[in-house]
Amino acid sequence: MTSPLLSRRNILLGGFGIAATATVAACTTSVPGKAGMPSRTFGAPAPLSPSPGQRLVEKTLVAKPVSLDLGGRTVSTWAYDGKLPGPLVRASSGDFLRVSLDNQLPADTTIHWHGIRLRNAADGVPGLTQDPISSGTKYVYEFTAPDPGTYFFHPHVGVQLDRGLYAPMIIDDPNEAGDYDAEWIVVLDDWIDG
Image 1: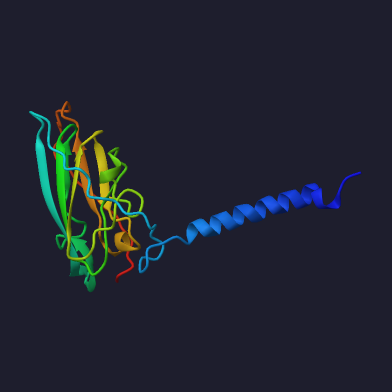
Image 2: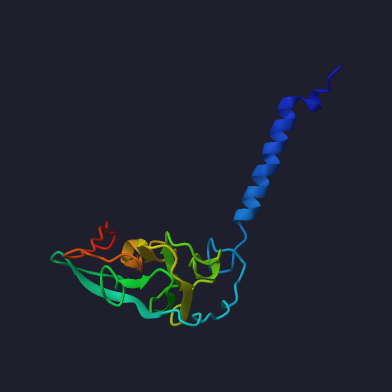
């Protein structure tokens, strides 16, 4: 005889209830004042240096509020170095990149190097691979440029990408001659400011 308390339905419902409780509990751990940010903190990554003979490419970016003309309409938004898109970061595969971000925004930010294989400490995902960069502070990203390609970088914080914080990045192939007449970089975007 089968007990009504141990029916398949009751076992499945109990399992779903336990899973739902664990999921809700995992979603509620956060730092006070940082809604949705995990409570984990990260120390500053160990500074790196280029290997002997490795070319060093250095760039400083300033993330700040700006007023820009978007096709005849002036909008208040955010940008890197006051430009939309932000300035091109260019290196060759194998170069050592050192990019300093000066956060002059009224909010935390990061830089995520979209599509690029690199060490976690340089990946720019707040609460997962680094602490967010607080307003008024600086952070230095260091990594070796991996695969040649056309990429872009942007924050992984709220709608900052949609406000204008993005820019192209090109990693050249040092073995490619580059025999072409002209190079054009085209960046398309939708807007929430304007």
